[in-house]
Image (cartoon, rainbow, N blue to C red; front, side, top):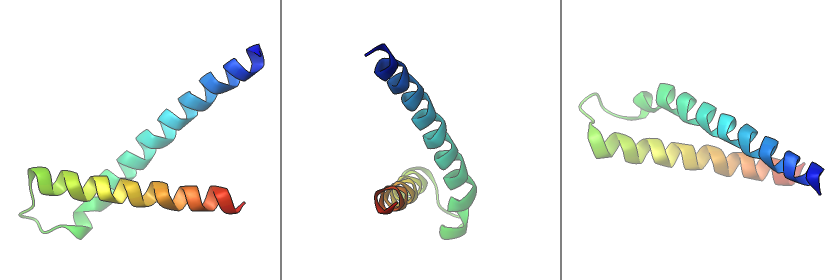
Length: 65
């Protein structure tokens, strides 16, 4: 049982790192999809949508392996 708990802690840390990386990469890419005049909520919504798309693709790839 202790090993399962440790694995859960490690998995949570890895997940946090992966999510941070996804968000950072989306930060770098989102500008190409928005006009320069975009601001605030428009940027946030587009960024969130891109993050969701990435996570969806990751889920599909993990489930197909």
